[in-house]
Length: 73
Image 1 (cartoon, rainbow, N blue to C red):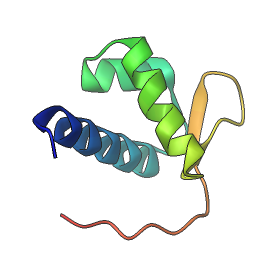
Image 2 (cartoon, rainbow, N blue to C red):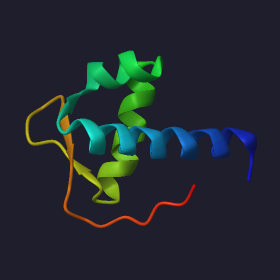
Image 3 (cartoon, one colour):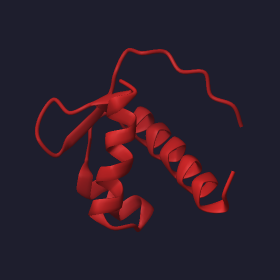
Image 4 (cartoon, rainbow, N blue to C red):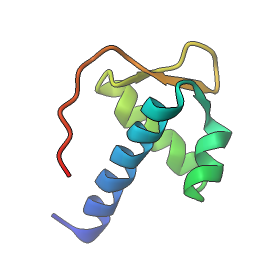
């Protein structure tokens, strides 16, 4: 895998874990936590939402779904 792809996957996994641990978070919470642009956060959230791992009950807020995930280190 390309180093950029590897970094993206690690970031998305970390983002998922952050949402899981914190319950409902805002897009701005993620921008502040990860120090990346809102556009990059949105792309990463789209990947998680496409895979049905998160959902947005209210515009700009995110929470995890009931879908079970097996995470490796």
